[in-house]
Image (spheres, protein in one colour):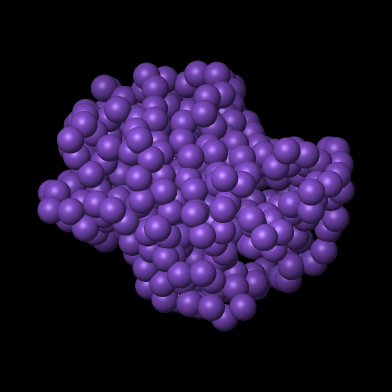
Amino acid sequence: MSVTRESFGFMPDNTEIFKYIIENACGTEVHIITLGATLQSLFFADKNGVKRDVLLGFDTVEDYLEKSNYQGATVGPFCNRIGGASIDIGGKHYELVANEKGVTSLHSNGEFSFRPWKAIVPDADCVELSYVSPDGEGGFPGETKVQVLFRLSQDNKLSIRYHGVSTRDTFLNFTNHAYFNLNGYDAGDILGHTLRLNADEFTPVDELSIPTGGNLPVEGTPFDFRTAKPIGLEIGADHEQLKMTGGYDHNFKLADGPRELTEIGEAVSPESGIKMNIYTTLPAVQFYAGNFLNGKTGKAGKPMEKRSGFCLETQYFPDSPHHPEFPSCLFKAGEEYESETVYGFGLI
Ligand code: GLA
């Protein structure tokens, strides 16, 4: 195992951004940049032994700042959406940045995703990124300290552990927004990948992608991934919820609350032979099929077309601050948030 570091460029204020590369004995490489604690690349050898970079992303700091749809970024303090872009905690009302359609909060306006983080290398197989969000950033109460530990194992599992604590009561909901294409970032769409997701229910949303309340059974709907099927098989089906969001962009319920690390699904590309198993301690996951990707150029100047990557963003439920029926992610001042998500790679 080894960790190496190189310069990735500079922020507009001249802060240097670094890239850390964790490599294991199989030659699997995870590249993490300090801008947004972002997963920039992940190289894994396909069935023919040829390494493919299975993450969408960019080659420069400028591109991450100007063109990103959160490719690989750490998102916080509250990933996904909050309706009305405001929250109430202990009788106090907080206005957040309404960065989507001027109405809702999406990914906390990127507060965590486009800042420089600090990095240390605690061991030969991991990198720890940390960020201190000042009280009131993006409208959220409390100075919040966050650490994200990326660790690669010899058997090709990438573990992402999150730790957060705030000086005031606040909602904490972190995720990583990696877009995967198991054929490579420049290899066309992901509709032929198969997906299994161990979720009996999903969360219906309105036109603003805000949950309408509660969950629905996946049984008998295109949202049923309990047995693996191609992502493209029913993405165009005549289903109100798919039309609402232009393809899969929904939260799936995994559990009633946080639990021990559990395998929750598997994505497979028959073409490259690469499979990815997902494990998490969190109660939900957003499956997003890259419907809004629109051809912006990414790595090596290659366009990232619609559905050229998919995301499995492990999380608490979207808009949970307004939905008592969903598990709460309100953390008391000084109370510690902890979660772990693992993406494990192998061949079929
Ligand atoms: C999330 C959302 C999508 C989209 C992307 C960012 O996954 O669910 O609707 O906004 O982020 O483009």
